Image (tube, rainbow, N blue to C red; front, side, top):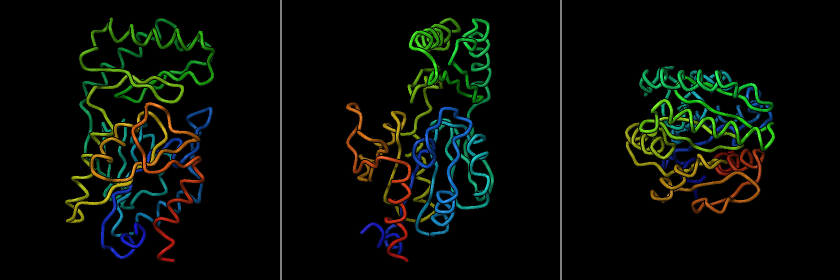
Length: 265
């Protein structure tokens, strides 16, 4: 029914996809997380369906996403970066939403404090400054060094008096400091409103993600009777209910082809 509705234009669909672990594989060096050519070609084709609005919803910044998705610039795809903190239209190449500049000053102070404490020199620890958020990566660190780095991040937020504006959010082998208002659930609500205006009809919803940072989005999609899809071998115990579990990124590609393209083939 889904692919028939989309292909015939009976029911517009808002297709929301996380980036890392959903359309691009998780890799040890997060700078090298490239989506393969087949996935990029599929996104291009989906973006050309007038009844399907494609959106990439990621914890990465829009600037980072554009380095991986530059071949899709000029297509009808929305990029939502920083867990909903910013939104960019790849068709018009304009920002729809940008976070306040003041957040950058706070993140810079947080990063500088951690550097003065030599947290970035702990083996296996890497600090990633996204401008408006700061991530402590510990995928390649020992448990001892990971614990030191994560504790230092929490203490730094408190010592700089940022606790009212900023919080921390876990991801896969990472902990991110970000403004409290940044949420993928909030991003989904914005995308629903925008797509309903563009398509003159409330869209059906599909959200595909692989991380705890996607759970807020799952909850909003579930509340709107959409389809939440988790990517991974098993759904975590604390996850909200999902429509489907897909084990791998390759499985996401197959799902999208079957759901959106098979009926039109």
